[in-house]
Amino acid sequence: METMTSQDRATRAWRILDAAGARHTMARGLVIDVLAETDGHLSVAAIHEKVAASRPEVNVSTVHRTVNFLVERGVAHVLPWPGEALFGLNESPHVHAICEGCGRHFELPASDLGKAVAEARRHSGLELGATGMALIGRCQDCA
Ligand SMILES: [Zn+2]
Ligand SMILES: [Zn+2]
Image (cartoon, rainbow, N blue to C red; front, side, top):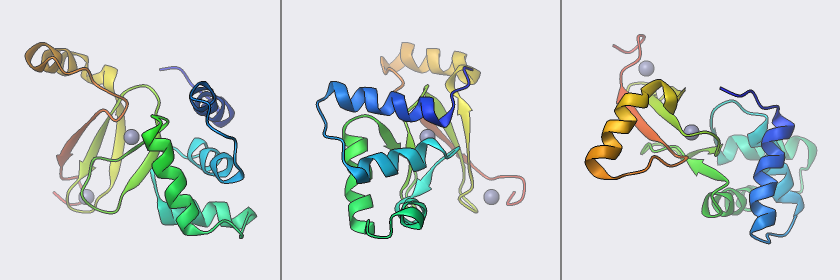
């Protein structure tokens, strides 16, 4: 898989937003930077904590609104899991492997499941999106 720096990841997110004519606001820039620097997914509270470290004037409801905006615009996705919503930037399609015991989650590139994804497409016509799919089970600690 290609390796992207956090700067590349942020630039890519902005390219999508710019194409949609979205305004550059401070909150959007900060939230994108936090997500771009994160491997995996973060809750709104965790994003806010990182944003507020440098910009305490940005409140949690602004962060909430901003991540939802990024999801609507196809820049970010929410982890398909019923617990606290966790957000990540959209990159190459990936699979979320989630432990139903402790909620720990891992990301696998969809290419690792190439055959399963191809079969799913063949049977359902479904094209795997950036949110990918979820494998739900128990991790070694919880098994
Ligand atoms: Zn994800
Ligand atoms: Zn677990």
